[in-house]
Image (cartoon, rainbow, N blue to C red; front, side, top):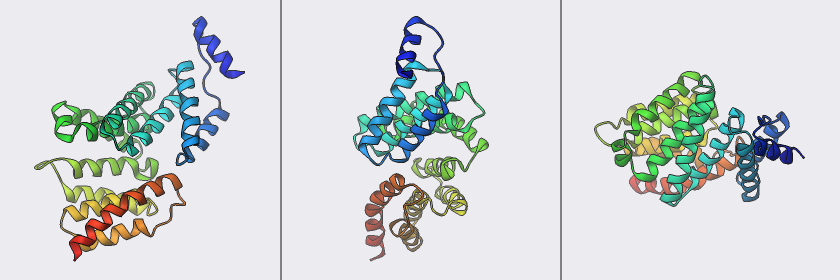
Length: 246
């Protein structure tokens, strides 16, 4: 019934209703099950409809950005990742303009730029002037809540220092940011994975091995979909570390 009412409101040009607390709770529950294709499909359809009905609803916008980032993060095809990253970025930007003092819009706008940049290549992204846009949004998120999403802004900044080309690359800063997130959220497997990759790049193979074991042997109970994804990625990194240790 509510979806029909929303559609009518949009058609006649009247203000759309904001998402209800029940809808927000339902979407968050579906997002927690995002490791299931059916849950992602259901959430995608619900948020797409909600965006059409309430395009200026902050709560809808940042949740749509969160879903697109999850999809971009897991995309193997560069064109798909580029498109999803751009959608994340745009949705995040719309959200942050509505509520610049909320962390979600700032954060997802930044990581959307990050996914887009990974897809097109870091050098291309730098050439497009995206570094400043990325840092503007990410630094705002860091100021608002560095521990949002279990240290997500810290991880994004640490990954920034890891992925930059020389001479901008700074592996020490990268590692310190991951360690800061881990100190507060030791359950965060992505932080351990990123730390392992940074340590390996910095020639610290033994420390990298200790970090990657935290991933492979860690619990995914804090966020099953996230944890399982990270553990899948960790297999390749662990093999590379163990090869270096031979």
